[in-house]
Image (cartoon, rainbow, N blue to C red; front, side):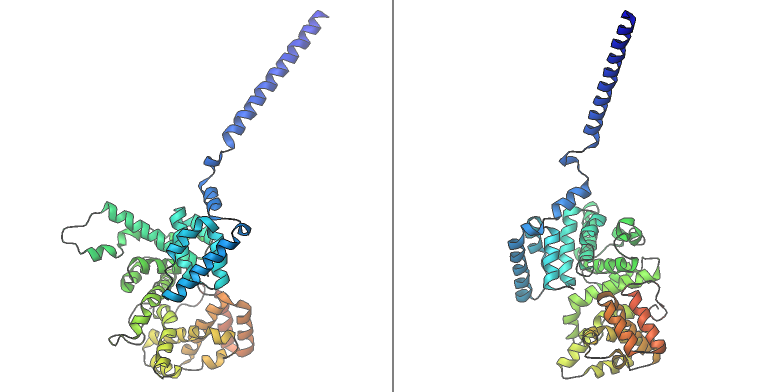
Length: 396
């Protein structure tokens, strides 16, 4: 009986010991695996830092919107970085995106400085793009690439002192060594491809390299050609030219030493350039008392791919009236050769596909037939930066 009691005491002590060890193990494990606030992952910290509950920022967001609108109305530009920097911690990136898109759903160029400020805060492309998502129709994404490449160049310049006799202005231009290794694969990076299609990404890279090249479009196109995939090089060029036309288009169009279509009538990837330029050319022609038909005649004087590219841009220039039913796609794209007309259709519908897909379906199905209708629907489905469209009319 005494032995039995002793055995029970031993068993109880063993069980108590095992329980104590288990409890200490669990306590230690929870201490190790449950991070403190300071140990939260970088991604979580940044998401918390840049996401402020909207219900807490109603008045501040109104003040932010007023400042942005006042700046654009008075300065006539989209240099909004200082405003964004002063508000991002107060209303978050989500608050700024909400207000910017409320003011203008497209808000493309308003989005550039937002992306720059987000990257400045976050420091990595992938996480910054996660916060941007598709804000301002990828304008925020373009800003992320701009700031990322700028930082990369600044780091390069710090570690590569100027050579004797080197022109300081040359050092302000993009140095191929800064980006040449990252360009070919940047759009394949999982942190980028999880948010954007390769063509969208390449277009954003194009904006960034023109920005970094101080609007030297030739140097920007050289950089785009670092993409080994020619289709991605084309879409990169479309972003490079768009950035150039946005910054320099107004001054170029009144410069008597430059043609109506400069630089699209001499640069590589003409359709990528004309896509952004023709609208300016039409407005400048009309301001002088001319008509859009004068621009069409100017297009018809261009050779080969330049002529095709010009009609591509002509289609894009009129997406507003097309969506408002003030103009039919059949009437808009009735000039030139068969290929000219089809490029015009693609120029209009690839952009409408991105911004107003259902309206585009109605336009294609009710205003065109046969081969033209098929081209219309294909362009619509590819949207702006699809890689499966026929590229024969786009590439040199």
